[in-house]
Image (cartoon, rainbow, N blue to C red):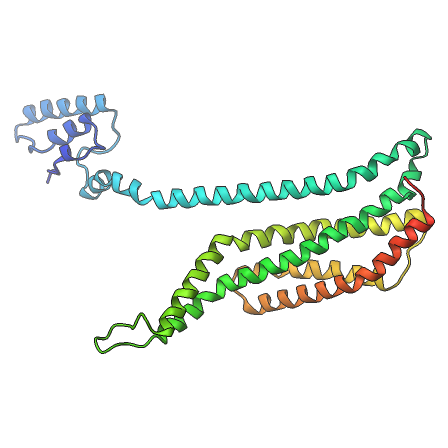
Length: 309
């Protein structure tokens, strides 16, 4: 049975396709000669339209063709979401570039003092001088502030994830009036509004991506500058000094690595991994704070036993 769909109502169908479909509406005559002539006519139309599809288009095909505009309309939210993700990635890239720029600006004045040592053809002098020795404490001070900020962002992201459960519990506690509707003036209803407003503000803060960015900076720069500090100490003195500062620094690097290793499980919704991640981060902050006095003592010795540059 030929397909008798009215193709004139489909904006996506070309005139040639409509002509082909129209030509198939009438059944072929029973006479063989007339049938051959009709088939040749239809073949010529198909050739001009450059179609590979059979002449009798199934109804499911025509319905898909006719609903192309509605499919495009449905894809608009997806496109908007992709644009929003692209904007977010652009902001993260900008923040990362700003951090690298700040680190470069803070250490450049120290490196500019290397001219005298290099002019004397003694490249090791600059590595043993005060300038290079101060890179470690300066960058570590920046990373300590980054650690505190990253912890704040992580807690805010956790709050963003868990506030939905509080909203559900608060909605369930809203009293119902005689008509069966919830009482909007009840304290429980007001609490729901407050929590909903708080969730909107948390979502606008984009804390997840910010926490990921600052944590990546800690992991990369933290381990790098820790190794740099050990190498600088060995270059200046010919040995390392086992003690609280060295041991605490090594422990902090391990905690950074362990915390990063838990991220895949956290992304799958493992609450145990999330709690362990927070515990490791808390211990990390404690070690960082405890390490500051010993680090300042080492800085004092750097000024005492080294010279610029």
